[in-house]
Structure formats: structure tokens, C-alpha cells
Image 1: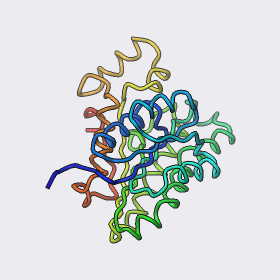
Image 2: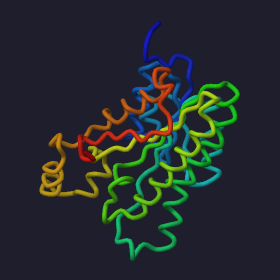
Image 3: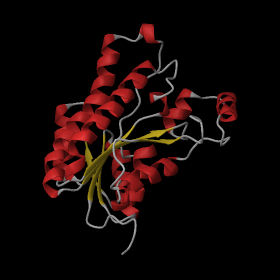
Image 4: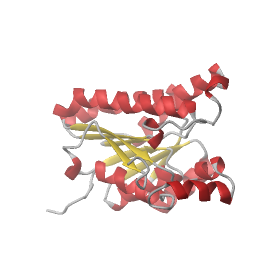
Length: 242
């Protein structure tokens, strides 16, 4: 039997046009899955999908309409990778109610809606993988990312709870929590070489992670070999959380 294959499986990856989402999609395709990418910006999305040989759909999953569009475009879904962009930084006491609501819709409620949309089919087929991308800040909150800290913790505990309900149906629910990873968001938050140097000096691996390293963890959780792993948070952080 060939190990670590996803031939015939269908995957939906949100936030799939770049960064960690695109890296995860790349590995899912490499393992044989048929992938649909969803993101908000058509140009980068189409370019990424064409390079992978994947399907694509423009969808803003912070809205019910966007979730419906993504689910409809992907069709029967065996693997859901819920990957939402991070909310903007700020001081906890200064975050507006509108920013809290946007973070709730984009990061938390999108995962709930997507999961609800795929669960019936997964349970009927007795096979499914729900994987959300969160952050190491779930366990170690970043002082200037209050919305991200809160919403990603909510996603983590939601999927832990859902895992208890659907484990006997062959559906697993896990989160992958990246550490400091070389994405556009990290560059935006740490714009100077001095910022990057200070951060990497605190990481036991002494470097930033690569999106491909996070994507590989996501792809592994989607395989048959990971069928007994559920309700878990997988940290990919170069030892930061030790």
C-alpha cells in the first residue's frame, strides 16, 4: 500500500492564493488531492491556481455568501483547510467594536460556517478532515494582536469540541499553529531587518519558518495515516513554545 496519498480526495483551501494556504494546497496536490482554492483577489488567486492545476473561486469567507460560493465551487469536500488572514494589530484597550466584529466574522465564524457546510457529507462518507490554521499566540498571546489572539483561541477550542462529536464518524478536527513564518503578514508586522533579527534571536531554531514547513504539517493531517489524530493543536514554531 502506498503511504501518504490523497488520490481521489477533494480539498477546499481558503486563503489559498499565497503564503501558508498556498503551501498547504501545493502539498495536497502533490499527494494526489483535487484542490479548490478560495480567496478574495482574483489575479493572485488565478495565477496560483493555474500554477497548481487547481480550481479556484473568488470568495470572501467572512460572509455567508462567500462561504456558500466557496463550498459550491468545491463540490464534495473531503478535506477542509480553513485559513483566514490575521486581524490588524493594536492595543487591546483601543480595538473598536467594528474590528472585533470583523475578526469574529473572518477568523472564527468563517471556520464554523465552513465546517457546518462540509460535515454532513463527511459523516455520510465516514471520512473527513477539518484543519484550521491558527497561531502560536493561542498559547502565548502577542501583546499587540488582541483580536487574533482571541479569535484563534476560539477556533482552537471550537474544533476540539467538534472533534468529540464527530470522531466516531471518521472525521478528524485539528488546528495547525504556525510560529513566526516568512509570509507577507510577518514582513508587515516586522518591517525592519532589526525587528527580524530580534525575533529570530529568540527562536530556538534561529530562523523563521517557511510556509512549506507549515503546509507539510497540514497535508500530513489530511492523510489516512493521521486518522487517529484529532482534537489536537500542532505547533510548527521552531521550538518557540518549549
